[in-house]
Image (cartoon, rainbow, N blue to C red; front, side, top):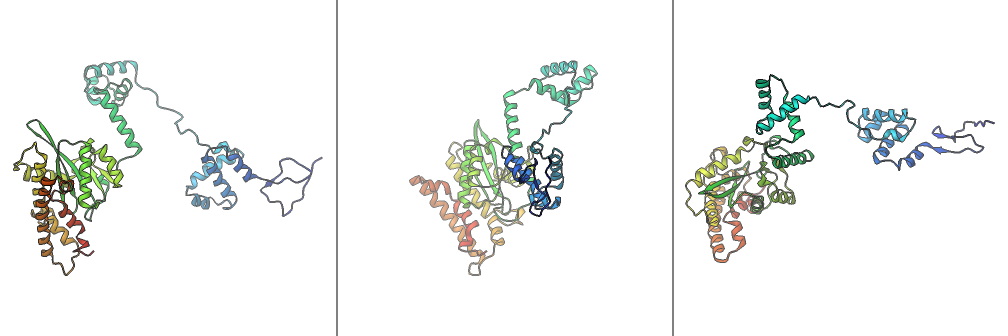
Length: 409
């Protein structure tokens, strides 16, 4: 006997009875699906909520549902159609393989593969374009560079297998966390917005030395230091000194892709929380400010400097003298013939009680006093603080933090 129930206002349309019974059994479809969804991945539960929201609260308004969950209407309709077409089967909300149905097959014939293999083995350092030319010139075969590259990859025919493996690992890491290129940034307008850092490799009668350089893009304030080599240990020391000198007034650091700026350098930059941008590979024009400073320090100081290259302390002392001249006395064409200090003073707002020439005279005296006292202190006591400052601390401290005493922003 088949039971018939009268429609009442107490039985909503979303309540179903799967089998006719004597007593009415109320089943909430959406709550039941939520319970079953606990056995599925979170993405299935998330898509189920889209459907429930669409059927209940949104009252089948796809635009409202898409806006609420921050998804496109196309995405919602795709999963809703699959779910509805499967008659509320939760498996229809699971991710599907995105692999193409028809995959590209190996199009290189056996004869072409053998020819490419033999040519590459005979000319290991020839690239795919040169090998393509040899195939056409000597054998009359037109083989695409893509096929040649596939054969080289298949047989791993590289002149330096270890180096190639290292390059592949680097490329894989960069795909995971791509590097921000400096060319994508807008030109900085404030002092300390971006500091460019680079290295100069020098050889003196077989003795290797490295000068790590840094320069502010806007004010052209520059700092440099000589080290035994350009490893990441020394670049880490350089950035720590630079942060100490500027008291952390560095917003972005720009370097090239050299190995000296990986390892310890990259680690300390992350610890300091400074954003970092990179030059494009083999593109010196991405760092013109620092490249010009590297040329200046070699032409103006290194070519005429007299010091013992074995004594790095003496070399850095002589370099500090030149850096003080560079930042306080030498006019800069890019700054309209101003020095970096004069440019900073002209940029900031000066209090009436501190005339510009007075501050500049005070700064010069401080520089001279700090330079003489710091080095005498270092040679007499071996103080680490004196070694860090090297007469340069007061200059940068005065430039970036005169506002606490002389300058009112």
